Image 1 (cartoon, chains in turn red, purple):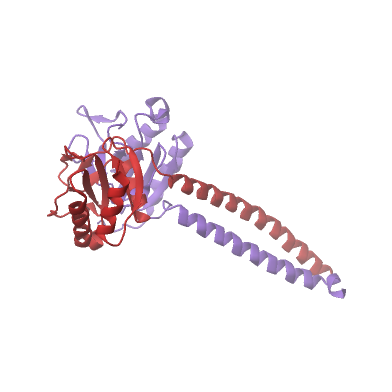
Image 2 (cartoon, rainbow over the protein chains, first blue to last red; image 1 turned 30 degrees about the horizontal axis):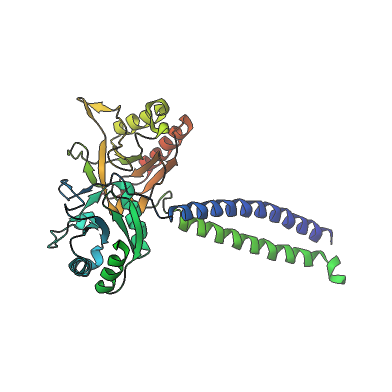
Length: 171
Length: 184
């Protein structure tokens, strides 16, 4: 009887230790969750955003007559589909918007036969934001001065995407 | 109610509660691990990119040191960078390469480590999307020490103090003692 009471007390002590450790781990988890939520906000701007070709040449992100910029991710796993998709969006939207693709595997960068630049490298911070929204199947629509207008859901059909984009940039 | 006086009953009950708490803790740690992609032993993509001087330095054979810092960050300035400079110099002597990445490329901090008047580090104005996505640093400075295969040995957020320098050296020492891994 006495032994089992001592064992029970021992287990109670173990529980006290486990609870304090679990509480500490819960606090760490909550902190990480809050940090992750903070990263999900819509940025105000992608200021100082530069893009580079695989060879290192700087590429101007906005064409002369464009008022908007849409940077997007070209996924190595479905490269040709992505390029075709954005070609069709571009064809439906017109020259008001500059489209710029960023390869998600810079090491696999190939010569792109696209009517927009497909780049291997870019400024770190803007790239993290583009990648973050791409994970949510969204693209950021940027003003010509790199301020963020809004994120847009990437639709299944390029025509729908073009329609949503036209609506987003309509005066 | 007789069982309440039974010590074995309490042992069994506390054992079940213990197991429940352990399970909960494992769950919390698992979830925290998922939110923390950068951890010791995890792989990180090679820090490829465009160097500020357009002159790509070769990658070290022994290990890789990556620092995310900005000229706009007070704690990245020379005033707070003593142990960082020491870490950089010591690891370079051990055959490691050093890469500096800044949030916007145009805000690379000034370099103290020079060779023939040029910075010794690879100073990237542009990085790959793969690297940016995998690391997703949101504050400066961040320092990462990686083994020759780009697996994280040591990671530190914030200014490097003397004790952090010692931790990093310990981590790099552990890598020296590890069996030679194949280079990629």
